[in-house]
Length: 359
Image (cartoon, rainbow, N blue to C red; front, side):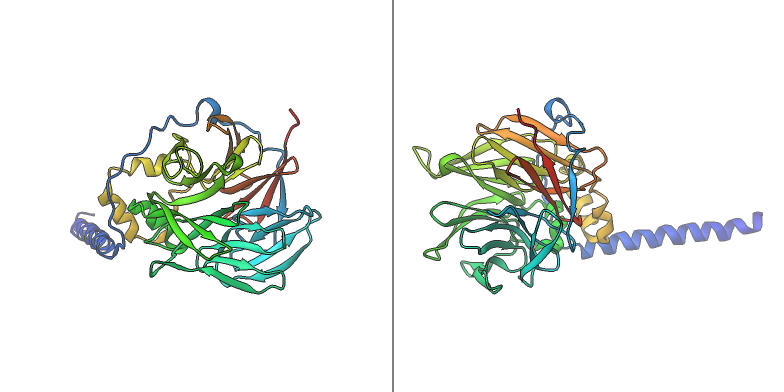
């Protein structure tokens, strides 16, 4: 046994040396330049955000593919969604479907128009319009000579102005976790006028700009800042027009898409808790290291989690809806349609449908 000790010690040193070399390589190859940032207060899942089973009666509607990230309700009661492979499909309540077109990219936000066309935020192609004949028109793929790198979500005003988010000017959807780790805050809220083709940028410096929703009477527009659990408001009318403030703050989970039910409630989808990235906020070197390691390492920061939350028109929490079993894992969108909540997920093969109680 004593004769084996020198050999074992050599192996241990060799193994430690190899690990150090691999970590150094990871640091050198890491594509991110992380910055220290300060998370908003995070009280955790307490009070109105406490765990509950309000989503336990949700019905899962299978879709023919992966990743129905956003779901739009059509006038005839069908559901329009986009899949990871680029297809835009129409789902009927009985589970049957038809393919309306293919963007050739990754549709992540969309809205059906009265004429049957679909306006799409495609994370790879930009802002698109799918026409009823199945053809796809590019509305905007660049701004001021630079690509719209990550069109994410949208809402459309009564005057035909598309308000949409560009999540990051650093990384596309394939590298979204790198943007979360880097914290360079290059997300922005933009608009595109369907009548004139005018495109503008209105809010910049957002930490992964995501969900977009117009408020009551289109007085303001909201945009979610995923990592901070924050919702920003840009005033469009009145004395405060052109100014911005924080509409909702200190959500203990990340925030993805947001929608307005047209009356009194904003719905916010949360795919993951904030805890992991909050804990890394003041550790840029560690985040840089993680950014250079295989994607499964950063992917381990994500959890099995399901939550949507309702807020009133002043930004006050009404209730959060949870499913401890996360049958629809990492919910990314929630829309209220005809007394039901319709929920999507970037990683699922289902759409979630929940009947709302008549209060």
